[in-house]
Every structure is written in C-alpha cells, then in structure tokens.
Length: 187
Image (cartoon, rainbow, N blue to C red; front, side):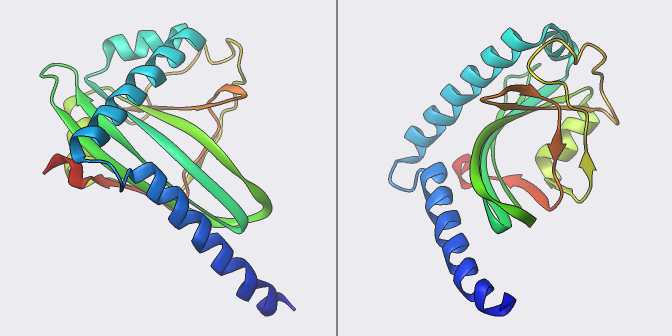
C-alpha cells in the first residue's frame, strides 16, 4: 500500500516543485527583470523584518552583510521547496544572487510561502556563505511568534536567521536538507 501511494505522491510532488521552482526562478523573464524582482523582494522583506523586530534591526545595523530569500515549500509525504534571493555586502554594496533548495520528510500536506533573512556578523561568515554556499543538515528551533519574544536573539556562530511567515516573525527554522548556492543571475 505504501509503495502504491508513493507512486502517486512522488510525481505530484515533483510537478508541484517544478511549477514552484519555475515560478520562483522567473524562467519567462530576462535576467535583468529577475534581478529587479529579487531586489524588490529583498527591500520588502527587510522592511517587514524591521517592523516586526527591533532586535533584528539592531543586529542588521551591526552585521557585516545579509541575505534574503523568498521560499516556496510544498509537502505531501515528502517536503521540497526552493527559492531565490540575494546576499549583500553592506560595506561595498556588492550583490550576489543566490538560489536555495530544501527537501525532507513530512507527515502532513500543504504549501508555504515565506521569507528567510540571514544576518552575518563578520566577513568570514558572509564570504563562506557567498563563495562556498551552505549546506544545512540540522534544525534550529526557537519560536518567537509575532510579538517581541525574540528580544534575546543574537548571532550564533556568526549568523542570525529569521523566517517570516504570514503568521508573523518566527524564529523557528527547520533547515534540514537545505542547500544554498550562487545563481546564474550573477553571470
């Protein structure tokens, strides 16, 4: 029974991921239009983050650099998703466009749109993220909700991560099976 279910679920999940990835990648737009959309998303994401968290704004002000991502995630037995974003060196203004993908197991079904914001404390953590990408195989959970419960947020190993959903700012982040890498938008 389980194998038969997987024969139905896996193609549906793959189709959803392909559509979500295609939409987020902007395959029907020029590179300039895609970069402009990522830049607009970045500004909107930071604006919302700062409106929801004074502590995030303080960390941003002291950060060497940051990255923002718009993410689409779907699950139906398996979880998969992807998104695109930009990493910015605050000192130089240099922008590196990036992609991300995530996968794992889930016992639920549904979809989610959210934004991720990475704040990098120093040049070393920022440069590693941008030049080598990042693979995450662990989870970090610290739910703050949409109120000011995140007042104690700080850099951990040179990085602070925020997930913004329609429910408000959430510091709950499951990044298991997630990879970040440079996008073709940089070429």
